[in-house]
Image (cartoon, rainbow, N blue to C red; front, side, top):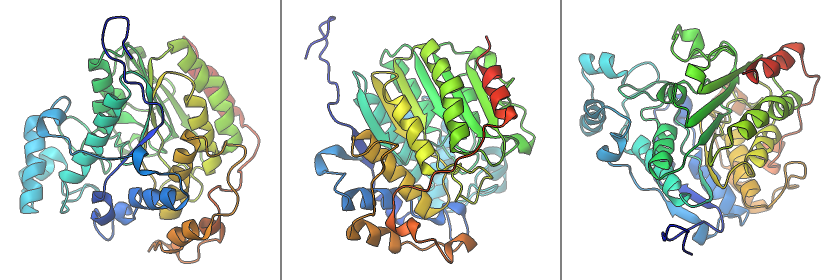
Length: 389
């Protein structure tokens, strides 16, 4: 197909899933929250359900230092390459780059694993240049800064993907982040940039805000020069409140912005079963957000993010992929899982206290029970505040 300017248009006719076997063997360390398998389980579960044929799966490239330098400092990139080779980091580099400390350990793939996540998001952005949908569940490392690691994130693949979309001629990108933690690195990268609107829905007062970082503070008043809107929600935030904010705040902001592309960070740590937040969403709420984002723009890149319960992450993110392909709708999730899919989930192990006696629906059902409740006044006020000019 040829566009009006004579260029060939390559719009994806079906969604693409980007993955890699590196996530099957790579771990941050036995005691780290990211010691759990995530992307590999989503791949296995999607295949067990018959949802991931070979023609929709793409192996992620590893982003090169040159590609990473579109956003990240070259000396910092070199420090990660050297840390992977030596498996050590000196005190000066530890302090300067925040690696080997503060939840950002030195591990065997300290460069290759995050560079692979970035390579997947860069490939996804390239694939949707002319339209379509791509899913890279390894992406969503939204805390990474140009010259340092932060919050388990060594690089920032959402920023790199958005920059590639802009470099390819996309004029306006709407970035929505539903991780339990504020998308501070992405907001900071595009502060004051009228081409990108970042919207972060996160738990109020949770790190990084609680860490004393005033840059990108994540409050409702924090607008990053007009290029951001923030929805810090209270503990216990549930499905009905998510639906309310989606309808009264997120969609009005997106529709007024009129994006040419949507990048969705779909972190699973806002789920009720996750140990790293006090939010109470079911995975149905995340699926509702994904369904709403599908029709906002001709280009959609969906990423992963946080998520520290292997069963809840696998079931949520597999559902995202199924939803993107029309295998079910948010209000009509699949019934009992077939034996091959159930076997994938029963094979998981988790050393956390919540993993000692997992409930049966973690093995047998993709969907969580819905988490309903009244929409609290503070949530209503939040919606009204962020849509004000």
